[in-house]
Structures are given as structure tokens and as C-alpha cells.
Length: 272
Image 1 (cartoon, rainbow, N blue to C red):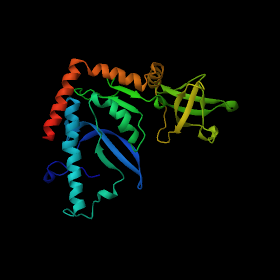
Image 2: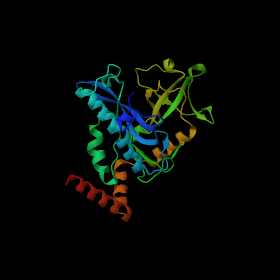
Image 3: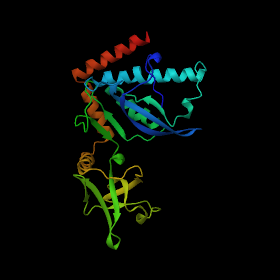
């Protein structure tokens, strides 16, 4: 794919590392569209950016990667540039920056923005605005998921006497979740998916795991530590109303109230 530098005369990105997620949008009249949402930047043209605060890295994503790429695409689309060797409309997916908002917008995000998305959302990520990039698991990064999206990826197998078994990984080895049970939709024959990874959510009514989908993109289950975190989240049972209540209290703290006021002032100046 084509990622030109901000100065087009200098060529293209090299040793630039970004973090993001691939989504599949259902667009009315157009069908399924793959889109890559970039949400963080670790290196820019061989220069590390992990020590910068998230706010700076997020801004660099737009200024150094997304905007130059969109400008370049516009040049091709308008006919200013023409090259038989590259066509943006032939790319397998589009690229844009993932949006982030201040805490003051959380109610609007949950009530208006998420319900109108063209893809499924599993909840919220509460990203520290001043945080450096943290490799591996970031214990300080807060995530909230809708209850039905608190899922675990198990390895499912059919054992002797047609016994259904589910496994996680512990220290790189299979760990049998003895006594755990998973149920499948009526149209699914469990024997046909033995040896595959199944993504499951906790079914409170049945007191067992329910299969959401087969993870054909994975060959290993979640680690036991991931499972424990999901179970803790399920046990905490933080509802949407409780989340909004807590965030509204946090927003009234001086450190957040001052920052929100400054953000609103900056937005007003931009509109003037």
C-alpha cells in the first residue's frame, strides 16, 4: 500500500510503525468494506515515538500519515497525478485514524455514536491522554465492554465417549477447563468444529459458555490470565448506567474539569 511522506518529494514512509484494528463495515448499497483504523504510532520513519504522550502520537498519525495519504489519493482521483502502476481504488482496505473523545462526550458516544456504527462495537477504551506507549499488556489502560462482549477464545475438542472439552493456554501449554461447558447454536454440529478455536460469552441463564463464532483466524486459545481478567469483568458487572454515573463523578474533579474547559475553549477558537 502507498504511504507517502508529508513532503511528497521525499518519497514514502520507511520503518514507520502504527497500531490499529481491522474492521468490516456494512455500508448500505455498497456491501462489506474493510477499513483499517489506526489509533497509535510507535515509530515514524525510523524514529521512535513511544515516549511521547498519546496526544502527540495521535496528532502525528493524522499529520504525518493519514493527511499526506489522503492528499496523495486526491491527486490521483482528480487526475493531477496519473500512474498505471498504482490505483487507490484497488486497495484491499481503506485507512483512517480512529477517533477519540474527551470523557465529557461519553454519553453521546454510547447513546448516539455507537448505535449508528456500520460495524459491531464491543465497548469503550479509556486511553490516558498523557500516557507513553506501553508494550505488551498495559495494566493502566481501562476497557469497558458490553456484557455480551466479554468473551474468551477456547480450544474446543471432542474427547473419548463424545465428551466435549475446552482448553486455554497456561505457560504455552493446553490447560483443560475441567467442568466448564459450552453450548452451540442448534444448527452447529459440535463434532464438525473439534480442534478449532471458539469465541464464547458467559451465559448467565444457562450457567455456561455460549459460542459466538468460530475463530478461523486463530490457532491458539486465550491465555489463562486473559480468562481471569474476563471473569473478573463479568463478576464486577459494571453496567452502562453505572459506568456513566462513575464517569460523571470523575468529570467533576478539578484535573478533568480544567482540561475539559480548555478543550472547549480551543474548539471555539478553531471555529472563529
